[in-house]
Length: 460
Image 1 (cartoon, one colour):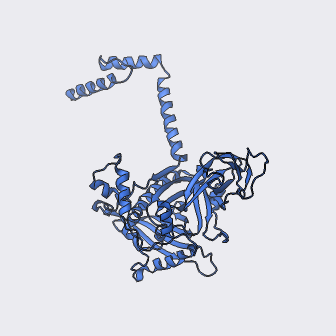
Image 2 (cartoon, one colour):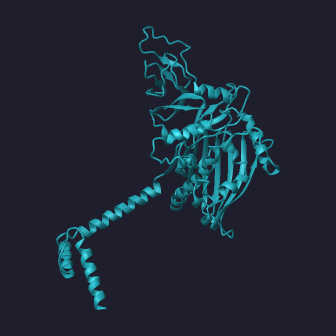
Image 3 (tube, helix red, strand yellow):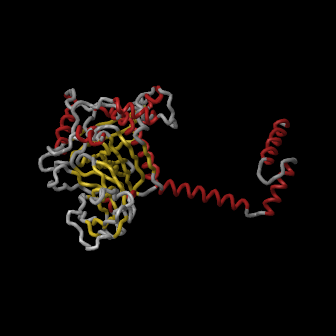
């Protein structure tokens, strides 16, 4: 016992010697006396450190409660590790992008692909990406757009190129009132109709009537800026429901994920009707990660995801551009204990927008998905998460963003390498896929730009 006390005393003396501001030699009694004198001389010192700790913890909790989580992945980051691992190329290797792009070029994409830019509403920006008085250039849907916000908050979308000498108004253009000024010669165009309103060096002050840009129909709602894209100019935009809890501020934004996917746009929403893939791709435990080579690891078999899903095309009297998916998710431990049940009602609104209404035992939330073609085989996919502001959602929503991102990346690994088959070999259990493709075909029209034409334009 005496030996243990001496050892403990020796250890305590060593710990005190390592404290900043105290001498490095002396007995434990001397060290304790020195510490006491320090506290007498600076009585505020303990309170300072306690206060600093409280401020740090409070700031951390503040960030956790109010700060949004953003999960973002580039085109080359997901689904190509099997190629990079074989070539022994790490994340910081400069050859990474070249190797991935070579794999993309070598991929057989399919013999007959649908038009890459279907008709409908598409997101061009998220609301927070465009500040008052700011203009941005956006390339999507085979178009180059100038998107700008007035000082009063109104958003306008015009064709990007000035008809004078072709400058891009979204690159250096200045917002003046409800107009945008070209950076090259300061021609000014109205955001309301695209008409040129001023040529500053024109001596006559006259403006040619043909000096006009295409004005795109746009709508800002639920955190997104949408444009109406249709191959037939005379077709009027159809409407879609707004999630009022988001619009009036009752539900708040908790974060998002943001992906670039190498596939045809039709592949992404087709997942909703492909109910058989849920068990195959999304059944394995999410803790096993997003790489489908390893997602069925034996150690993760203790827990599996269960999915019950159905997809339905609109019936007579319902909006023809809105399809519905119902989904029940739960997590099963050892295939017995069921936890984490979530009921999902998804509204597929046209080709590029989905509202997923979630109900859990702890309350509701919503996920908004947008899919926008950046190139014929590159889709920008965003999921934004909204829920009531409370401590539970501060935790759960960040977990949900992570979990949904892992599951979506599993799909990406398939999409980034799959071939589009125009006439797939389907069995009776795949009947919903056939129904989905029939429903989706309404978003192509005779004047839609073909995949071949869009690809040739891009290659040029």
